[in-house]
Picture 1 (cartoon, rainbow, N blue to C red):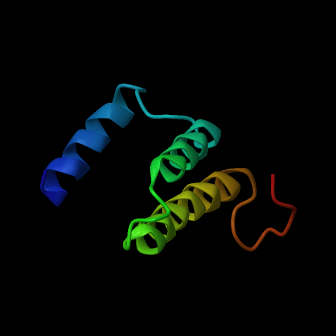
Picture 2 (cartoon, rainbow, N blue to C red):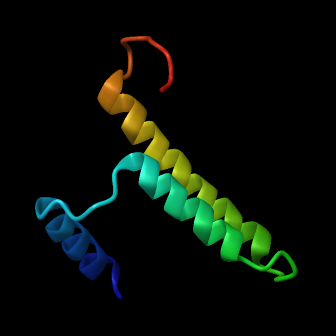
Picture 3 (cartoon, helix red, strand yellow):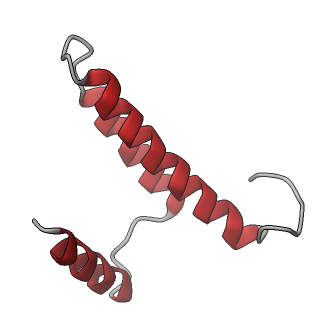
Length: 75
């Protein structure tokens, strides 16, 4: 699937309310990490990419509750 197809499909799913809530999205990412084989030579890079995705979800979730510059604590 090409980047534009991913974007269009994700936007349509979001409009329909089919996206995961942030906490569940992070759980799903954790499940994907758990499915990776530590013996795979690409394990570290795959896990790093998934963790960066989780960090993005976390940042977006945090910013909805406490927009940047307003201080506050993480959820």
